[in-house]
Length: 277
Ligand SMILES: Nc1ncnc2c1ncn2[C@@H]1O[C@H](COP(=O)(O)OP(=O)(O)OP(=O)(O)O)[C@@H](O)[C@H]1O
Ligand SMILES: [Mg+2]
Image (cartoon, rainbow, N blue to C red):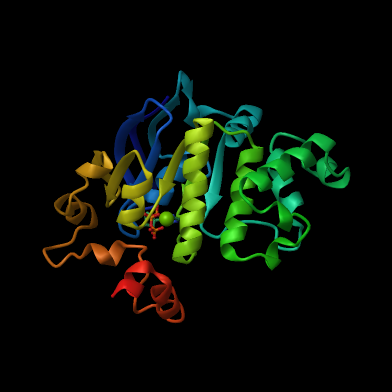
């Protein structure tokens, strides 16, 4: 389906992505991991042309993605919906309108904004919100929702694009563990039920292991691991993260951190393990 051929991106003297080649030939759920600055966001953003590649080729079927222009490029951007760490909603707009914005790409934006939306759009937006378990929030302003709810709105907006694939850049990095699970479950459900490809940048190993069919590890712009989650041994993780023997997986875990202010005690007290002890 999608092929990277020797793709690189430099920002001035800094090479963010360095000659990456790999292919995804079926709609997998792929996790991309690596330490901060490894090039994960740049890789994802080159797919939907938010960041222009410096060299190489990205092919989707026989389409050369990096040479698309104008309407064809906008069409492609609709086909690969982005989900961002900071949700990127319009805070003062209501939730259902935020979701319908997923339909704008490819239409006349101003016209759509002023004419409100077609009945179909409203219906589909409500269905998407319902699927994500937040239809009851449809009329609230986006800024009134919790982070986890906002990310679900962003995923509903992505669904409105009827994309081939969802590109999620650290979708749970700003969420607490419970909301992180809800959001990852939603992405996994979309992958399984709709057969969509999901490529998800993650900074936690345990999330990549439990949700992804395949894990890609990046280090300094280079692909250093590509395998199944079960192949991601502690040794492989050390190589990806460039860590020595002192490397501790807990440092890259979403598990409730006893040191985290405010939430560790109550969350721990509610867990069956804590009760049993
Ligand atoms: N717009 C930009 N201008 C200049 N340098 C950039 C730009 N975007 C990224 N870089 C550099 O490219 C490298 C890779 O950045 P990128 O954001 O892709 O890493 P990342 O793996 O997503 O990191 P993080 O986990 O912190 O999000 C970094 O050295 C970064 O400073
Ligand atoms: Mg990033």
